[in-house]
Length: 417
Ligand SMILES: NC(=O)c1ccc[n+]([C@@H]2O[C@H](COP(=O)([O-])OP(=O)(O)OC[C@H]3O[C@@H](n4cnc5c(N)ncnc54)[C@H](O)[C@@H]3O)[C@@H](O)[C@H]2O)c1
Image 1 (cartoon, rainbow, N blue to C red):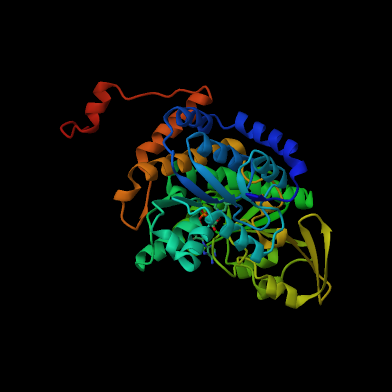
Image 2: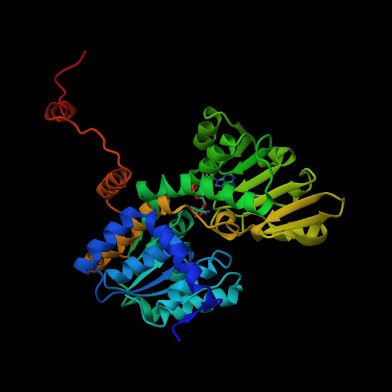
């Protein structure tokens, strides 16, 4: 058997979800048709480790249409959509993923995707590529290259490349403008609130929302929470980001102060220990805490457990911790990515561009990857312009172009006031 999923009977429901996503992802669908004709991935075996959502299914089908063999696992224990996983398995696609798997099962699934000895790898958070480097180094020689979807994964791979430890080249898909400035901002902004609302159904208007980290994701969350009538506080460590938050109308405070004021906390830093014991000690009764960064280390759950008298699941993805002094703190989605664990991840429209970048990066690796060094590479900026233009076209929008005179003016230094 080339799959392990929760329940194959969910396949029909999964197919409908994927069909819906396909209707919202015109750029990737256009690349699929081109790929079907030109077969740029023919002969490639792609092992992927990325959230099994309906949008990922559209990517997987596109890779196969372009000639690749694919084997897939989810990149987070709580992010797999079981209906989608069942639909892929029912299509004969090799997929090892189910919602709620243990950490041991998580790595077992990755190992199964490596059984077919990939020539390309695709990561979201670098768990698969680390597994190759740690436990399956013999596979690395035949891997032409890999791609990485998210900020945290790219940071770690850059660190590895810096230490001379990276065994094959990687494209940092995250760092493309059409990914980082859209998916992380608008995708995370909307879908994190979606997750919070599904897990709590609270009224956001009038609440104080504390967003830790005013980077791409944090800014998206802050913008959308403010749009729903929340008063937003940002915490930061970088002065420039903090200044941007202030000038965009937010309050900026250290977490030690913000911890007393927040009704809802969202961590979005990619850093560990953002909310720790001393913060739980001063939070309001009823405070809601969640994370949208890649790993579940931003909220120190051990500290929370230590302070708790008891805990119970009060709603799906929502655990009430009753603290020893009688206050209650609500932890959503066990501190894992709130948007994927409690909702459906980013909307298809924004994943359209992220996954178009993934697809083009893999095609480029298949063609020219053997010429690359064992480094982390950015995708060409022209690709962003092409993809954005295509996206605008599919939205029925057109833009201006420079006239010949304007073009010349760009390089003219003879004229002034
Ligand atoms: N939920 C999702 O679907 C999703 C989507 C994309 C990215 N991510 C993940 O979200 C995280 C953030 O990604 P990003 O693209 O916004 O990164 P980013 O680098 O743009 O932003 C992170 C921000 O956090 C700040 N920061 C770091 N440590 C901090 C601390 N101790 N206190 C306060 N602020 C701190 C940094 O200064 C930076 O401004 C990463 O882990 C990334 O992988 C999640």
